[in-house]
Image (cartoon, rainbow, N blue to C red):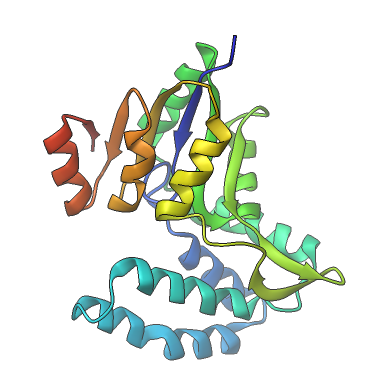
Amino acid sequence: MTQPIVFSDLEGTLSAGEMWRGVGRYLQTHGQSLAYRRFFITYLPNVWWSRLGLIDKAAMRARWLDGLTLVLKGKTASEIEALSEWVVEHELWPQRRPAVIEELARHAHAGALVVLASGAYLSVLEAFARRLGADVEVIGTPLEFISERATGKFAGPHCVGAEKTARVRQRAGTAEIVAAYGDTVGDAGMLGLSRQPVAVAPDKELARLAEKHGWRVLR
């Protein structure tokens, strides 16, 4: 019998923290304050354009993550792992959502496989997953390395929106998705694949969808 699966987003869902904030704090406290300030000033207009409706939020977040990742160019895999552990320890884990984590633990106890699916760096997801349990799997956005150094680019597309939904569907295969947790409208596709969709502290668009489809809301 195929093991059932539970999927969950990370930022905004399992934690109220934000990866980019953690990465920024890490860079500022580990000798790259100037590089981070340059990134912040360069990419800040994207936030303004998003608020004015000139670009959508998903595009803004993608550009922001692209710019932030450029700052990591040249770092070794071990340095990226250290950064990821720091981000989880100082940003994401302190702001974790215990209610959601407890639900995942109950699903795991009942025999389901827990998989985190997020646009966050794969290494950050792995660091967070280690705190949840040894059997937790991750689907994320991997960084590209050449000659053991980060190139400042991704090794594949951002794991968000339709890409996330496709990768979740691929990972599940014929297994039943007993539940899925997300906080933004970009998670709606993933939630719609599950038997028990749960909108966690949802944004306005996801809240409307949850009400329309009768999905459970966890605030």
